[in-house]
Length: 244
Image (cartoon, rainbow, N blue to C red):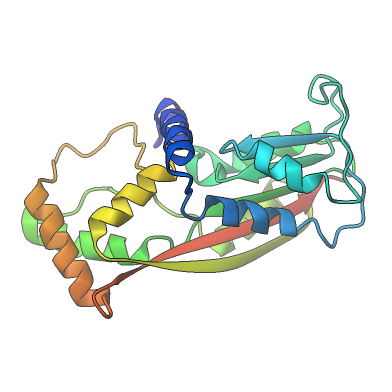
């Protein structure tokens, strides 16, 4: 298997994001995605008492909301050591996995019988405007394009992965969030704030200078801008599945 992402870089970017978010008091859309993830539990009448949180550390925020759910209770002991996990919440982890199928299979293996996996990841059309603008401009600059933005898992791929991992009654649904920015530099800043900067093991050797980014902003605004703002699409894919 060819490794695409550097796990240490991913972790480093997440830790940097935590510090930035704490300083700014603003996480762009992360808390919104965390709340939408937990909303998937609202209509589930099964009780859970041993929960594992995977991914970006929004555990404290989510636990506060989870404690208001009548179907949720918490053990004081370490559920992971006792192999009794009956709920896994995965937040923005799957799209950084070098082997998404193995990621899901490992999650399923951790669950006790009757356990539930719920996850959210960025996929499909996320940053589609940026990717198209960057692709066109790199071809003009360099005669070809390098991998700058992570490959995205589509909703169809997400459904197939859940089935292949062996989850029962898999459900996949998609929500798109569109933000607007005054320029591409503000978008790059927010991607860093969210811990979503590129984390490739083998980054492109072709450096992008400031003039490239200025031209990219002009191209982006020309092709997608409206009223001096550029739109940015984030596609959140939510997956849910049970362990028999």
